[in-house]
Structures are given as structure tokens and as C-alpha cells.
Image (cartoon, rainbow, N blue to C red; front, top):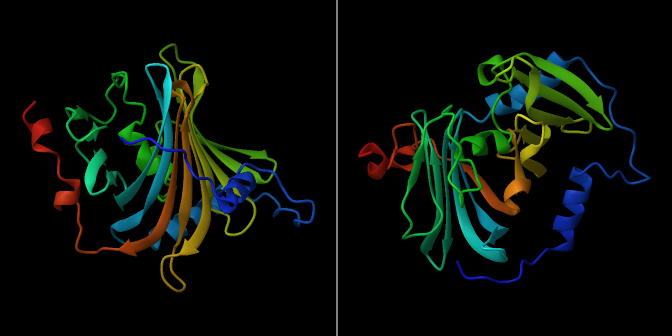
Length: 271
């Protein structure tokens, strides 16, 4: 990928400050906490209004470390998403594919550069991703904050914790020794529209594996579901950051689970 300094607009900085929990002195107080099932219902009603495959076009700024050196990039990006696990995320520079990430109900795949070999994985597999693949394709669907929150995407119970202006929905599971641990966190905003502002994945030791911050929610159509137009994602261990600014979301009903956008690449089928 060609390198360049990442332009950071003042509006983007402001949106991330708001998303991080820094509240203006003149901002009204947040809503009182509500029972977890009610907070989850607000998120799920919004997700239920999507009703098909979403397509997002926009730009991505990123930064990662390789061989001890920091590399920056700025590329165009197209994202397809269909609940619960269908994702295609492709970044291009001057029309050439620079990055491809995909997922369907059978597995996921990843390619960092156009001529690199494709990495193929299976959902729930215990293996770690090889070095140099910081982004877990199986986390992207959750990182978007567009899926309904149900017991179906949790391996253990859900509990709620109130922190500042957020209602955290914590996904619990047990480690190999049977000790309880937090696997994933959804931070629901106590300000309108009371949707997901942060998604956090943690490892067995409780350290953050991946965190996404969602901002600039706007309706897909008049009176339609609200979708985030800004996503900032970080992978602390890999020193990788990515900012996705969506110019436009559209609903593409012709794209289904069997469409080529979500088809498992032939290279994965041959292994």
C-alpha cells in the first residue's frame, strides 16, 4: 500500500471525543438507566428495521506496524453486510484491491495485499491468526454494532453494568479452568438514539483484543433504521488502527447469502 500521512478532520476528532465519553459541560444529563432487556430492545428494534443486505461506500484511514515501522494508508472502501455473519470488506487504491476481508456462515477469509495468499479460517476455531493478520474477520460483524443482541450470539449469560453515560451489556463465558470471564462488551448510549457506541472484545486475561467506536448515526431512509457513518477500530496488541468514514449506506435486496459478494473463495474450498 502507498503510504501517506492520515488527514484527521476536526469533525472526526470531535466525534471520537464524544464517543469516548467526554461530555460537554453544557450537555444535559443522560437518561436514567433502564432494565437491560429494555435497552436491548431499543437496539434490536433498530436492527430489525434493516431487512436485508447493506452496502456502505466510503474511505478508510489506517495505521499499522510492520517490521518495527509504522505505515499509514488512505484507501477507498466498500462494505457489504447481512446479519448475522455475512461480510465483504474491500479496500482499493486507484482501483487496485489492497485489502479483502470476507465472512459467511461457513467461515472467513483475509488478504492484506492483492498478490498475497488468501488466509482462510473457520468460525469458532481455536487457532490464532498468523502473524501479520491483525484484524479478525469474524469480529467485524459485531464491530459494526448492527446485529441484534440475543442469546444466540453469546456463549454464556448476559449481564448489565452502568458506567458513566453508558449501559454496558457484558457477554460472559468461562475459560479452560471454568472461571468466568468477560468475552465481549456492547456499550449502549444513554443519550439518544440509545444505540451501540462501543464494542469491546477481550482475551482470556481480560486485555482488550479489539475495540470499535461508532458515531454519526443517521437514518438509512426517512423514518428508517439508524446506521453509524463513522467507525474507529483499534487492535492494541498489534498496534493497528483503522478509521472508516461512510459516505452512504444503501439497501441492496438483490444481494443474498448466496450472492457472489459472500461466496467462499475457491482458494479456501480447495484446502
